[in-house]
View 1 (spheres, helix red, strand yellow):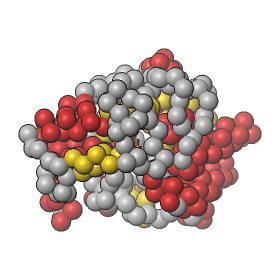
View 2 (cartoon, rainbow, N blue to C red; view 1 turned 30 degrees about the vertical axis):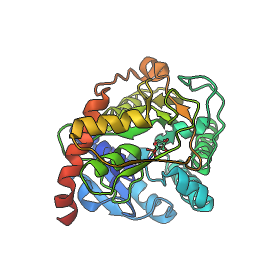
View 3 (cartoon, rainbow, N blue to C red; view 1 turned 180 degrees about the vertical axis):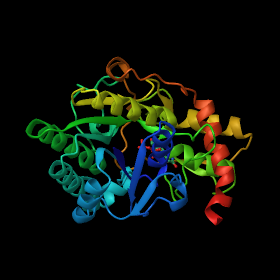
View 4 (spheres, rainbow, N blue to C red; view 1 turned 45 degrees about the horizontal axis):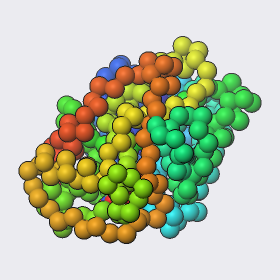
Amino acid sequence: MTVLVTGGAGYIGGHMVLELLDAGESVVVLDNLSTGFRWAVAPAATLIEGDFGDAELVADLLARFKVDAIIHFAAKIVVPESVADPLGYYENNTAKARSLLEQAVKAGVPHVIFSSTAAVYGEPEASPVVEDAPTAPINPYGRSKLMVEWMLADVAAAHKLTYTALRYFNVAGADPKGRSGQSTPNATHLIKVAVQAALGKRQGMEVFGTDYPTPDGSCLRDYIQVTDLVRAHMDALRRLRAGGGSITCNVGYGRGYSVLEVIDMVKRVSGADFDVRLSGRRAGDPASIVASNARIRRELGWRPRHDDLEQIVRQALDWERGLEKRLAG
Ligand code: UDP
């Protein structure tokens, strides 16, 4: 039995591949290398360069490798980009996911684990937000992912397939053993940007919005360490294989940090000062989003091991320092 990891050459997918291999799983990665890297895929996995929306290719892989679970990471993930290019997001994140699911059903793949997002909640009324809270995404990114959750629920009701949708909060940090990290050159995510500013790879940075209804006026997010996040997928896989039913779970720590707090932490851990410009709000950003993780603890037995912003920032800094060499190699 083999696990197919779409987007396995990317940031989160690359960590997932390591975790699966460490657990003795056989792994096939399907990645078009649009943002991922060949070198980010551990050599013990089979890398197929191609698109998860390519039905023929997917059908061939599912049959050839006897895939029993698909972990679907490949997606576009930048909120403001989704506002500027909604059709690109609906094509990639939604339409191609429909094609992938169709192939999964045709091939009789029993399990799917889907990378969903906290963005499906929009601006939640209660914090921390529970999975049964209303889904009301405020940007095309969140909508493009929520539609896949709906498809999964309908597919699981109609066919012999069980799934886990994991709603990620803000993923950050790197492999504690230093084997993998966030490598995308033009990444827009806060910790990555701040770390690049601290290392002089960019001229300072901007804070997008300081007039939100939050304690310091900047947005609050729940930063989840990437190894803890991928371990949630392992827990989900084990549960599905043991006959567990379909489920949707948040993956976060249940604690929010403001943009300004994160930047302070990066400055403190790096010992570097850098220019921080207070700017206007960015399109599509909710003010505050923090996870309740009661369900994933209860149903999947998941436990955080790296719930420490200082460590997360340290890992991101260490990875970023070594990145030039890797990108050159
Ligand atoms: N942010 C910021 N400056 C940056 C990048 C991000 O102020 O250079 C803010 C962003 O507006 C949001 C928070 O940091 O309030 C987290 O954004 P990110 O893009 O990391 O993740 P998102 O929550 O959009 O998935």
